[in-house]
Image (cartoon, rainbow over all chains, first blue to last red):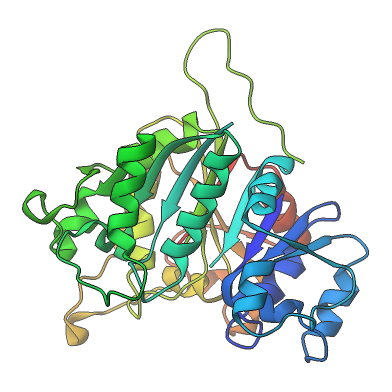
Length: 99
Length: 119
Length: 131
């Protein structure tokens, strides 16, 4: 399952609930305002790090760059472009957009 | 592979329609097929020909129309959501058609992947 | 990872569709318009599950009286779902508990799932639509 999170963890419970329900072996892709959840030094970082063993994390680079967060992404989060986003949706048999 | 998309928000207010567009462009560039893009909730507002955004910014509606013209992408606007929001044949932008929610379900059944872009 | 259903030897493809509701009713239209999708999907003979998580559990609360806000009360439509063969309604236990609610507060029979079960159900779906 590819979980797509587009909300900042400070705006909404989307990331928190997603991580509560995501199964090991699934992936989370941060897009739009969700990319703030991929940045280091926030109070949401621990939640992401804790899940990072079982779940692969990705962030959409164009959204990171747009928000001035280039260079602030946590270790262990893979940056992808839109082409990579497309590939992720094919790598996982289903996607779930957490709105 | 065949992609279906659900776009649930209108142009400009949310990034959803931009993200959907960029996804579609990337998918087409990789040789994939876009089976349908279904516009629901405020997403139907992507289909009005009456928008007139500032010249120095992207024209979201025209971008969709160009996608339909250049790549024959099926752009479908939900009739019930459209009626609620005043999107009708007389103000429909080129490349869009108004149809029922069944088209969304059909996409879910026929496409290999159905991706939602919303709020 | 879920497997897509192979096309049966006869008849159309049946996929597992999950509708995810995480928003409260009336403050936004998503609860109402997602129900409209569910009703249409039911006519396509697909395997439909509705899940209510986070504020989505409020969509099922008994006693919704909307005359004062002048918005149509759509909550009784949830009771009509079984007439459309949509019977798989699931609610996230943690979301209920966070909101001080129990099954008794809800207007339709549901199955309450814990986090593990909800995550597992999600992982089994072919198509997930969120609103």
